[in-house]
Length: 386
Ligand SMILES: *Cc1c(COP(=O)(O)O)cnc(C)c1O
Image 1 (cartoon, rainbow, N blue to C red):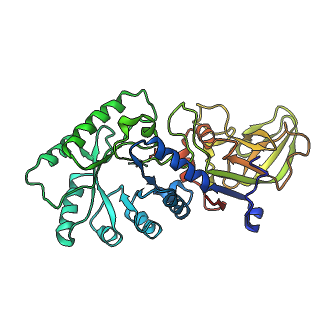
Image 2 (cartoon, rainbow, N blue to C red; image 1 turned 30 degrees about the horizontal axis):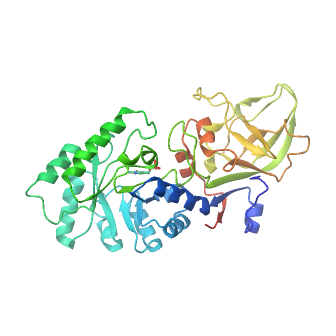
Image 3 (spheres, rainbow, N blue to C red; image 1 turned 90 degrees about the horizontal axis):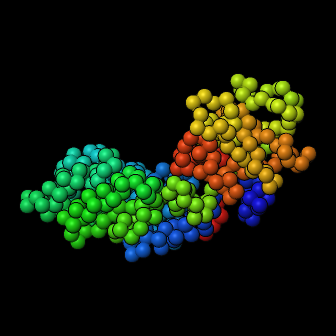
């Protein structure tokens, strides 16, 4: 399926590429709509940080805007300035907040800073007095101990009679530490803490849930949800069957088929050992493409958790990775495919429609988020329009 089903628009460059990505913007839009619906009365934002989780901020922003998103989260002001022309009337929130020196980016591009600390609050107030009113978001830490004013600091601010009238956040937000584990008691504790803060900022919109938080149910939705990974097709909740559509399919070409004999070895460190005569596909994908060395079939120290590495997919079968992932090349065992089924020039699927990106991530001791945001620059990319 995934292997032969090339996008109908495939370019000559796509047909000739050593490795390539098919990015399904229809699936992206469907996933976002699904998260928006799951958010109930709350509206869903789109999270576009890190080049839209690696898939490309321009196509992602245009697709999600067309699907109805009007709130957009990115990490820093440069990302926000690049996003502005793509979503002219969208609200763009900057997670890292405003710093001395980058405030022109906020005022010139209408970016909303997220205020994460007393220092950022003081700086924002001084910028306001120079430049006039500007919206902001107040970030409150309710237990993650990462960014945000402490809940007590936020409550003091809410009740401060000397609080300047020009300080009027349009949103109060917090972030969950354990939403991917629905049974974790910290979820409820953070919710209770956040409720005391939102009550003190009565009449101001509020936001708590990332993708996994949306699945925790209506109590966690407030006014605005912030689903990222689920939109991109990744797993949000541990142990839950992933209900989202895969967005990214990665394929790489077989450059050569080798025959090896029982007792021989392959790859660096002689890390693939053969207990039978075998056929090995030499595939044009490596850690320089974000196919992490830790997904190696063998020969990687410190990876005790999973005995085997990643699998690829070719002609209807899963094929195991052999030996170490190298910079540009990987080996896959195609011995169990019919003789001559695997040929030089064939593309194997690395992850996507058939092999879940999170399964490859697990083989390498990491998460789908990291696989996506590491997608290398060498892939030829094709986008399926929504
Ligand atoms: C990245 C991020 C999100 C999105 O999280 P996902 O787990 O990808 O859904 C939401 N909120 C904040 C503050 C973030 O940094």
